[in-house]
Image (cartoon, rainbow, N blue to C red):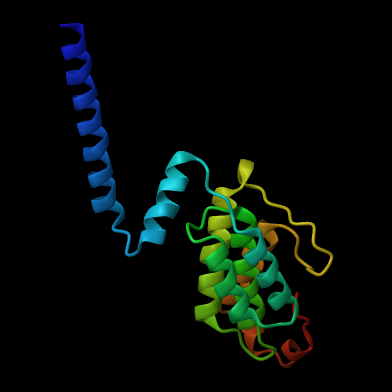
Length: 167
């Protein structure tokens, strides 16, 4: 009798686990097996950024190949769960979208979205990156710069605007 109860309990537990998996698949709607594996590792708490890809992207970023660097960072952090990676993605959008005469609003908006993700993922909503090659070291600075670039003001028409430096 005890063995029968154990088998019934095990069957119910297995059915519930399988049902939860099916519901998760339906809700997450992953397109590839890789997305399923990434989602499962996030849910299990074992998700990690691919450091080799992250470092490759950093090299591309330093060579001013911002679109390629972003693509590599997105492959390094497919679940967009790493604050540091999201900060660098936002910075790459900033650098590519910045212009002496005008900023690319679409790139700045995408950068702002990535900066907001970085802030949301960081502990206590503060993120500081110690990279000597960067002029902005906190996500808050980067966010403020991106927001400022999206705002329209009379200063946008100043001829002195061409003298400003990119950060």
